[in-house]
Amino acid sequence: MPTTVQQLFRKFEIQEIKKISWGTAFSEKRQGIYVLSTSSNADKHLSITNQPTFDESQIKLWISKIPKFSVDEEKANSIILKNRLNEFWFP
Image (cartoon, rainbow, N blue to C red):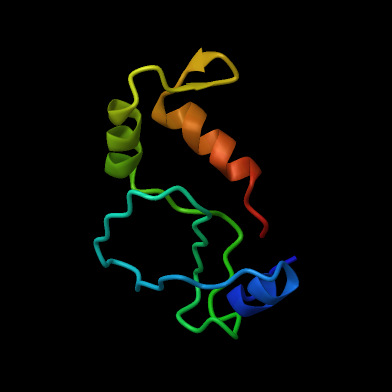
């Protein structure tokens, strides 16, 4: 079920507001939809992977920023959170 970013945006009539490259720090205070692509080209499938990868330190930082972070009413830890995120991955 892979799709390109452009196909996704056209299908749901989403207007792109801001685009940044992987590895670029950014700070956004507004709520919204954030689309992450494994391709450097919005019109092509350049990198399709069967399993997501996670930066363990960033997962732990995310959890530490939200003291009451829970998944299914269970206090979040990196394993629980990565398992839940894996459920949303389309190979």
